[in-house]
Length: 301
Image 1 (cartoon, helix red, strand yellow):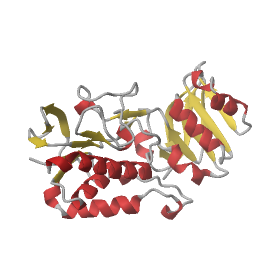
Image 2: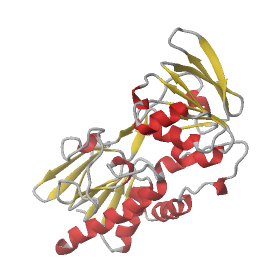
Image 3: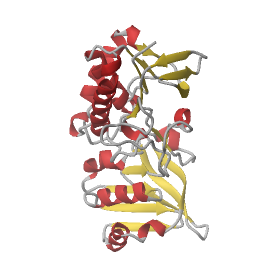
Image 4: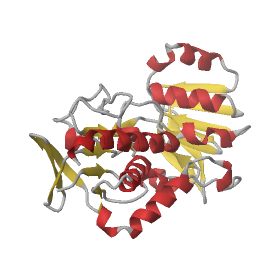
């Protein structure tokens, strides 16, 4: 029996676990890996790691602590979380069933892939999935952004403020019917290729170009110094989909104290409906969730 189980080993989950340990809570982190998406870094031929603020130093420190504390972690994927009376049962991929008085979900999101030749070969080598994190590195550079929807629009908007030119490859033009969309349409350094689709990523050591097909079937190639795929994020909420309230994007709805609609169940990081998918934001969310869980547990400890 645990006081708290944290599900997910990314920035939010690591932070929550370390905070709980320091509060002397009997906590267990259950995750398939440590570090989450921070284990993947964008490589570019012209920049060094110190130019990006990623919060990796904090994440690495917490990761090192948990690698040492064997008793506080269980390296398995969680399949299901259920609640009976005041206790939660966390079922793992290996068939184990762990019980706890409270749970923090910090399972993050996964990116939607293009599923085209070259994508997996060049991932994080000139091609990545987070323009909002890396846009400042592309001052006076040529970039290509692929995707539809709000995330793609925000990402293109941020790139357009610094890049020499931004090519937006989108399958439809609906996202342009907004103030930001109209601004991008009129921007001199933005070219919108509506109705087009990427069919291949090309490069050498790094991704260097995208091959696209327009609505008439014509194939062309665009050279770029950075390629961003922003097709959207899929929250990893399968294990609690029938337990907590989700928004229309499948993210866990939380209040300002990281509480869900289920007493004793908290959530933190990208898996929630909180603003911005950033490492530093997730770290703060993890700390907040741990403090909220501790407050919930105090009468029971």
